[in-house]
Length: 173
Image 1: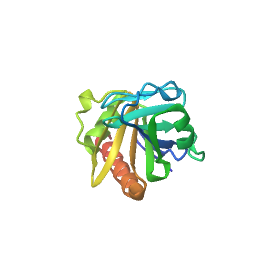
Image 2 (image 1 turned 90 degrees about the vertical axis):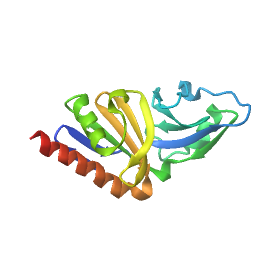
Image 3 (image 1 turned 60 degrees about the vertical axis):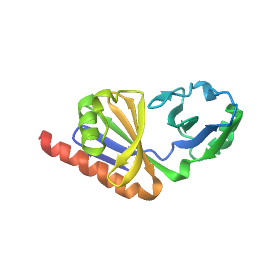
């Protein structure tokens, strides 16, 4: 699925694998696939792997192009002393890219979520509400954003993002 509204393009990212990682009591935080697990509110990326903080001693690990594999099983090898749970099928990821830099991304964020956009720069991630849904918002770059929501709400999330992007386009014309 791809939707373009003005400078913004929204694309579903079905090839993204997701697994939650939680430290067990007394375990040392691993560095899976060479990615340092980020502090609260942050997102860290490596070669095809990324992580964002979801709670005390808990992270979501992303793997590009590995949705059809048993990514969670592979992650357990790279994260000894951790509990790992497959999450890919439970989430939908929409990637949003801007052809005109950060401004359209920031304007969209202001319409969709209650986040202080001035402090939500690249490398930031948070969980927040978007309409009636709980979502993770990840600022991948100045001109790129990802929104992860529950797969059962995928159509509603797509509609909300598309509607907000369309309203931005109307305002800018």
